[in-house]
Image 1: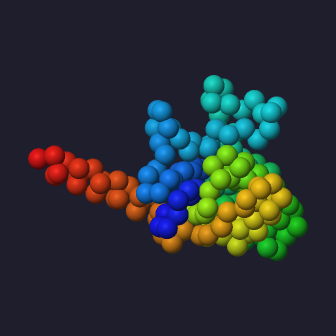
Image 2: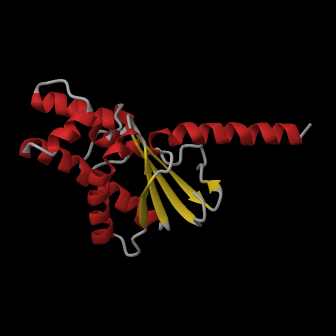
Image 3: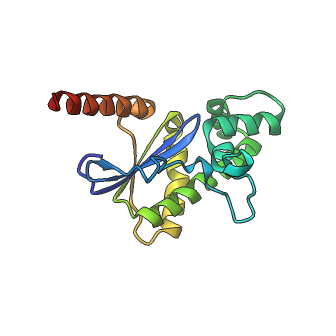
Length: 180
């Protein structure tokens, strides 16, 4: 994240994850699992935990989770993109999407309280609906976070993970070449 001391990259796509950055470093955690927010619980009574074979937040609010829940709720197989499009026309779909967006905003607000980022960058397939995401996330940030960060859409849109993987490969190759 250019020109950012403390950053938070949020990937909202088929799954959900975050990367916390400090300068040009990505925080990895002790086991390299930092940012596995799929396992965040929705509330203290949530029993859909890692140990029970679930990833509560991902199952509820990721692209695949929204599509699965919409199919179950509305009785018709629907891709996430279509669910978001229908939310602009139909009150029942709007309420369904708003519930997922509220959860996304809630979790990102909690992460912001924890990390205190200067900037949050949102990428992944769901970033195609950034205007809807932005409204929900900014509302929660303003309500809950003492120092709300700037919220932007990823420059690389849905391909941020791909570019990140290429960058990591280049870093590893440079390190290997410099050791020879």
